[in-house]
Amino acid sequence: MLAEIRLRSPNARKFVVGYPQVLPDRGLGCWPSLPIGFGDVSYLRARAKELNRMLRTQATNAGVGYIDTYTPSDGRSACASPTHRWVEPLAPANPAAPVHPNGRGMAGIAAVVAGAVQ
Image (cartoon, rainbow, N blue to C red; front, side):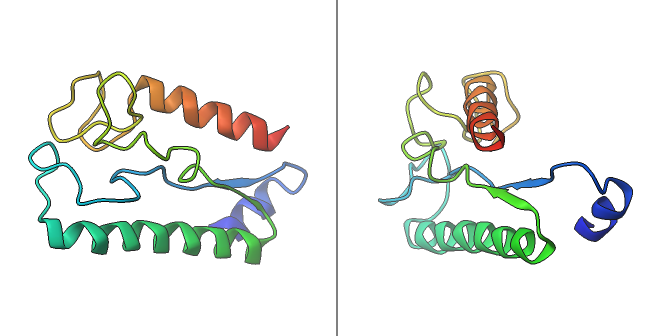
């Protein structure tokens, strides 16, 4: 896909944007907001980090930029308070699809992207 984008837009600056934290980077999650077994939280956290590493590697291999949103979203996972989180749990308290960024998250991610692009 990145090769095709390079072909179609050879003069554009291109970036791959990583995923923010859905689960907190520490601890056992937040049962029942995210009903994930305590033993599975560390596994899923590791897979999220692995996904972002793969995205970074693919971006680097394709010669495009990578923008980390995982680190800036630390403390703003679906387990954070409704007034602080960037990602909503299964039963959103803010307008958003379950386990997706809310408006605050989209604004935060947009700020990270804008800062990286500039």
